[in-house]
Image (tube, rainbow, N blue to C red; front, side, top):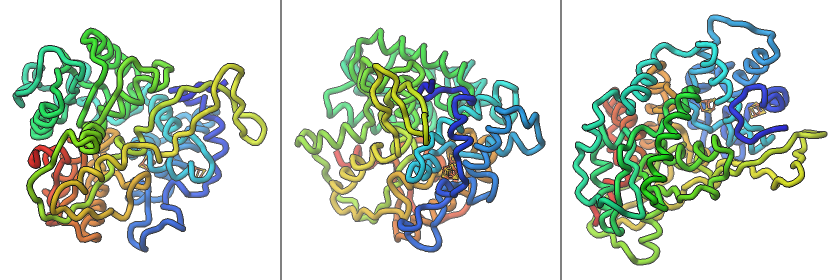
Length: 425
Ligand code: SF4
Ligand code: SF4
């Protein structure tokens, strides 16, 4: 019996055996390749080549599960030199419908259980577990960004997340202004880290504790909608929390909405107007966790039968494959098109083929060379399409783009979409 989204490596034997090394997880489809420069989809392949790609990791997982391998010097790096960006999963699903994301997550969990994870992750883990935020900063500084529109009680909770609360505070301030125009909001009392870094690094038990505390706090408010401007928080609340509870996203007692979805809807209904003029050529960067990683989760239990066909057990619905296409893609594009003077250009790799900014999966902490390579590539891509600025919708993307600019000035400006919206209100 397969339980959708299981965190156990042994539950991905089919994936690990069936992978035929077709390489769709490392390159863009041949019929889709935008040019002869931006051809990779997997940043760890682009940086390290060969085994440091999903198929190498699957075969390593297979050898570990079948007890054919105990330990080897490069094993830890092979597993963790990966951004957990999901590009490989979208690539594989163009071909075989293997659950690559789930397999890679379970492989991390397996390594963590035996203590084999990068020591550079420990500070981040301790920060979340002890201080309840990824930076290890005091809880009282979480609202130092000074929310001005927050109410004591509202149907909408704004979950700011660690990045916008402590570092990219302009994102929280801009969201405060936007939500103020859209009927107001309340903050989650005692907000703490959603747990995303723990999940992405494979520390599932610690993650579950964060999840339980956050779900309890939200239930107490009675709010029916949780809004976030952070792609990582969005994925965590919308996908990972229900997944760990063996529930579908649609069965949650509250709705999880990204600020871009809310603004797009309000613009469509004429409830919000964007003024001013920007006069700029902008490229939209699809954050992995807003796009392909954040398709609604649908719980399923069943089996793989002959020819790998799925056999839903009696009483369960047919499995819904997440192929990366049903994430939040159009809302931010609609908003940018509604900004006067903006010329919106597509990056070469977009939608489910988007290239990760490099800021994910514990990579900036443990493998800064990979994080730097990924963001440098993305900024090169922005220049190649003639963009004057790159826009994203996640505080961590912005942090990563700023770090990339600092290292090598690409002469490309960087914005979070909330800043542009707030400026136009
Ligand atoms: S795309 Fe899927 S089947 Fe092909 S090599 Fe990658 S993981 Fe294996
Ligand atoms: S998650 Fe991203 S970095 Fe990791 S193997 Fe897949 S495409 Fe490569």
